[in-house]
Image 1 (cartoon, helix red, strand yellow):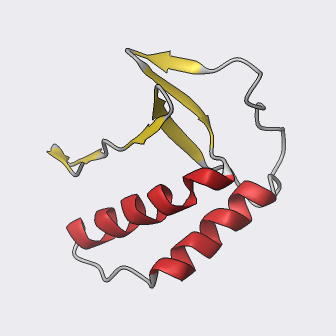
Image 2: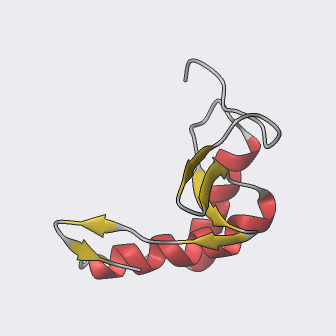
Length: 89
């Protein structure tokens, strides 16, 4: 992956009260839950929670592996995923 991701102290994109930022280790549980919920909404089976958490940790720990961003609302990860006009969460 070319380029670098911003650190927490660098500029962030803001929409309303949300801030989009790189995921942190403390976000892993919420990321896994959100991805599992989305997969189920899409009609798929969600992998085991530990597999989703492991995948999230890889992306958080190794910025060369890819980007994992979260929407943060005053310290709480928020999920609102819309696809084909349907809001998942």
